[in-house]
Every structure is written in C-alpha cells, then in structure tokens.
Length: 123
Length: 123
Image (tube, rainbow over all chains, first blue to last red; front, side, top):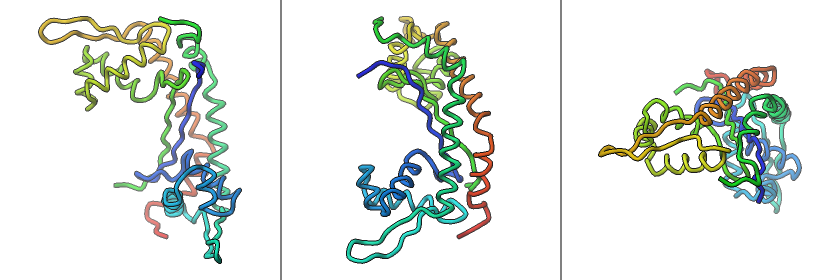
C-alpha cells in the first residue's frame, strides 16, 4: 500500500432522486458494448446479473430514449446493445469526466497536495 | 418529488486508501467551527459521536498537522476547535468544490440535460 495523494472525482447526473448516469453505469455501458450481453458485462465487472438489470432499467427510464436494447435470444439468452442514445450520453459523460479531471489539477489541489502528510513522515 | 435534472459532484482527497477530505468531513469541520464541540457538531449533523470522532481521527492523521484540536473540559466535556491547518485545508477544499461546480456547467452538461427525459414526459 502506498500513501500517495490522489484526487477522486465522482460525477452523478441526477433526474430527481434517481442517478441517471454515474461511474458504475458508464462502466456497465462500456462492458455491454464490449461483450454484447448484460450477463457477460456483469461477469466482466464482477456484478450480479440482477444488479446489472436494475442499473439498465434505471438508465432506460431516465433518458428520453433507452440507452440499452435487449433482444430475446436462443439457448444462450438474448443479446444487448448500446443504442445511439446510449453512445451519445456515454460520450458526453466521459467528456465531462475528462474535462473535470483536468479542471481539478489547479492551485487548490496543488496546495492540498502540499499539506498532506508526506509518505515518509510520521506524526 | 421533482424530476428536475441536476449534477452531483463528490470530490475526495485521498492519502493512499484513506479519505483525507471529502464532503462529510468538510461539513463536520464547519459544524465544529460553529458549535465549538465534537458532540454538538454531531448533533447538528445527525451523526453519532463515535462516527464524528472516527472522521476527526482520520483527518488528524492524514495531514501534516492536526485539523481539529480538543481540550479536556469540565462537567460538560471538552471543547474542540478547528486549527489553522484545518482552516487552510477547508478553505482550499471549498474553493476546489466551487471551481469544479463552475467547471461542470459546460456544453457536455448542457447536452446531457437536453437528453434527459423531460419532467412532463413519460415513455
């Protein structure tokens, strides 16, 4: 374990009390895009199928069109794909994350970094 | 309940795996500053004394000097005050929050806002 200083940033897009987009949902969209199914995405992320479905349901009802489309499948269950709306939302969310990460690297973060107990120090 | 869109931002200053400063700890510092004691601060925030103490302990060991000083007291228990280091860290953290909130109000947030299901819509 290291004692290195870092800044963690969490951005949530809220619709009322519901989290329409956040770090977990964005990662899930990426995984669905890569694997083509909700169950495979869940396995890749170490998340239960039930939990993945819940996140997809919240996303699909918060935006003006669904972000994920599922198709009934054969013996292996159906596939899932990220819609154009999903790509659009995900793109803007990732761009916002990048922009905010850059914006955080200013003088206040530098000052805080200096004030943290250095790795080799002990009180 | 409203379905209005909003952006939630959480900034955590990490020292290794420990959260040296975050929204909850910043609010606790404010409350200690206002009330002059950890127990009164806990009551004001609806947090247990034990939880407040844990947060203070983490803060005090993560920075190069303690952020909160406690003094043994009389019948009513001791007081607590935010140190100069505490004021310094809190000031930079609040400035970082303000800066990041401004930085979030750009074109990506505007685009996401437009893509969210409008309040009056239903799928």
